Image 1 (tube, rainbow over the protein chains, first blue to last red):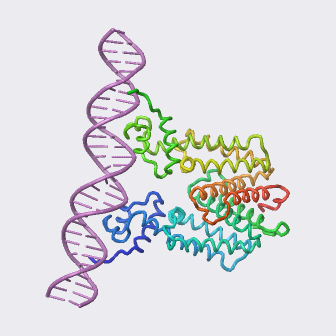
Image 2 (cartoon, rainbow over the protein chains, first blue to last red; image 1 turned 180 degrees about the horizontal axis):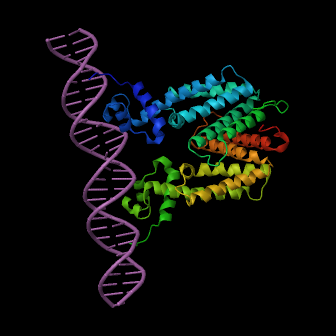
Length: 194
Length: 194
DNA sequence: TCTGTAGGTTAACGCCATTAACTACGTGCG
DNA sequence: CGCACGTAGTTAATGGCGTTAACCTACAGA
């Protein structure tokens, strides 16, 4: 049998893949070990605990998420940037519900937790996007929080199957983005069709 | 020792109280039993499983929540109704984070699950509130979903300690409500929704 | 070639949810 | 008035989980 098969990173990535399949709260060390072709205690050679594993998954997921948002917004401005960023977020949550849940549940363990810069990159992307709307400096934080609330709320409710009524969820999402975009624009201009 | 101390309802209510203190995912049968001055297996005489307990908590919580929203909106209209309902929701989540999490995680077990009418009462309250804005009938669902997303997202992020930046969360909330209110008013939202 | 380290194993512990088997209280019937 | 039965509660046992301890052994470097 070959040795040195597993590393903290490989365990984390396998955990991230698993968590998307079975859900954040259903992650178990036994299932992950089996997936990796190893007995459960072997994981503890690479990860100190299940909480540590979850935190590592959160970090790589938040970094992935930050990349997705940045890539979507990059090269666009104003309404286009908002629509693209919002879609990117929704898509990420749809494709990686477990990763997103892990990333969102995590709290920094200290001042040099790599989770912090990852979170900051997400915030920076949204802030850059909002800059295109030329808000008053005092309103930027509020707009940021509103945006985050609306997108987070929509994405998680959708991922949890919370939208039961028979009406297109896609339509609701673009409607919401339009609504937010128009409200963010100065009252005069608004030529955003779809 | 007296008998017949516990009932399904009393167990559920004690569970609801406990879940607010320790968090939805930390609920354990042992802790609840201890709280009730009884051994763990005794709970199974009133509740079939921990999942059943969580579901019962979800039902009473959703009913409570529906009452809170209804009471807040009752007698108000338009912007006032929105502000009051939104505040009521935020307050409920702040005071009862575990109950809210349980209510939100629950899914109806069948067509005659009492959870369903409770959910419908919540939806009905929000729909009644929105009626004051005289939206096109096709837009009502979208507005409802947006409202729910924004309020759910804000409340849960706040309850989870997700707003770290040093700026008044209260201010952000009222700012968001104002934003939504203005966008919903017919005069300024005439071009919404293609 | 020998040795130390590190990634893996098996075995064991404690906590949890759940079930089985049993006990005793108190109601309601004779 | 007493007895029987239903039921709220008990103790004991099972199985699954995360975790730790003790051990084994393949491989790297002296």
